[in-house]
Length: 305
Image 1 (cartoon, rainbow, N blue to C red):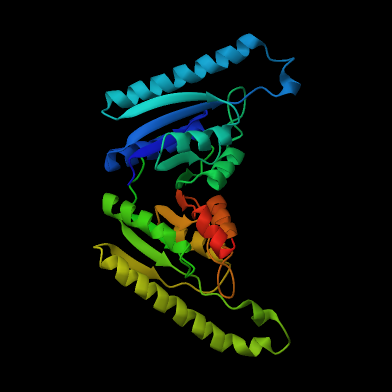
Image 2 (cartoon, helix red, strand yellow; image 1 turned 60 degrees about the vertical axis):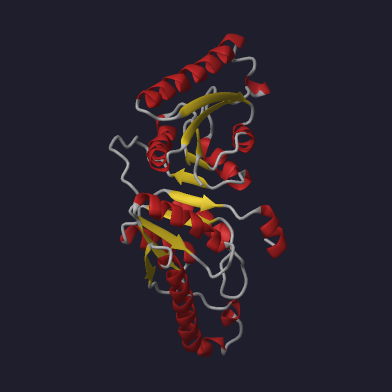
């Protein structure tokens, strides 16, 4: 299912962190790596300060940069190819992913800007919203991590009870089987929105909390049984009610999670998450990689997302 992995690179050490993860994944999945460097067009306001020779040099540097990386990976037995494109970075990445029929995009959430380089945070954000395939995002630190990437041994899958949120489960299954990892299922108990309405609403809280705990536990128990029937090692997490994104981030950190696997949208409503915003906050706050699975557009239109 993961046969072609796209790794967009902007020439920075920060962006290269994604390549470490992608290389590990390609080895385990026996997948083909596609390296992509997009050279942004020079904005009209900067044309007077940047010569044509500088623009051509940036394009040549992009090709040379990718060629060196590809040759190094090929010498290590990796199946790899490289490409350059000119144009807006996010749009070029999304179009390339579609044209080349990739199964996964792996990229860092930040890089460095400059001639031929990206303002990487905004690029990753646009790619996530526009790509039709899962995006594996690594929150880049200020220093390149030189140690080997630790295989994914503990996967956290946050769920809200919706079918859209469960779109992350097949990918958690793939990662778990490939890396012999355990899957931790988490659902944050939430209260209905109407609890905050009216002076007597607080009287309902204890019973509603009990119902929320029971609903979350029953739901996770059912999902756990389904995954265990497929041969996975699965645990369900018990957490207190709270801000959903913060609870996910805190649990992932405290439980030593290696990767969070979640959908970028779920079904909102009473007791459900506004899942896109939760995923966004988790991505920005988590200290580990996040594999984000975007719900198909036709499914989102049916559910009103």
